[in-house]
Image (cartoon, rainbow, N blue to C red):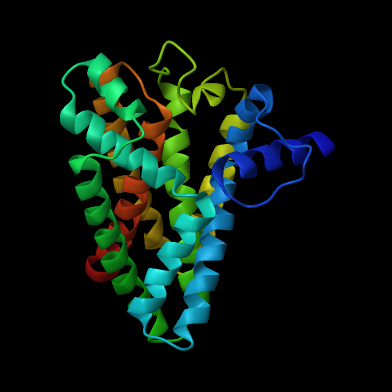
Length: 263
């Protein structure tokens, strides 16, 4: 139990800005095992984000509350995944060879592709979340809004982390922040990822089983993103995982809306 707690806190420290015990560090072995808890981090981030939404929705409009929910999510993770998304936009937008793409993604400066990508990403999140939440808040069903938040964060993180189970790490050196997690994984990492990644959606689907259909477009997008990364850089990097999480989160919200309205 003590070792599992250490692994969990390693995961929490690596993927968020939430304070952890002082004895936790970035030990590569623990980071490798921490992948089993990555979707569970989505539970935590989703809960914190929903809490911000709920508090602000008591005094302000739904649109404003959604903005603060998104801000809270970014602050909780330290823009960890958004940074990866911006780097991928810059790298694949401006590079035409594997070496050039990897070099651009490694650069800490943000370019035009990254800036434009982030603007469009946040606009999509804001609009889709606002529309989705309005379906529930009209009937005061904040439980469903809460499940929407945590399932979106957990499923999108599952889609991202599953890439390391099926593809190879792209860089030959240890220059990427994901290098420690790009190693061999046991059944515990795979089972833990899918358990924590799917459980919120399974609970969500108890209210409407059709919500399970949201998995299909999310993993279709995951498939094409992984194939795209494989084509251009022969695998993935930490930035690719971050971009996958962000894109799949948006796809999840979009899928939910389409399922609610048309199925």
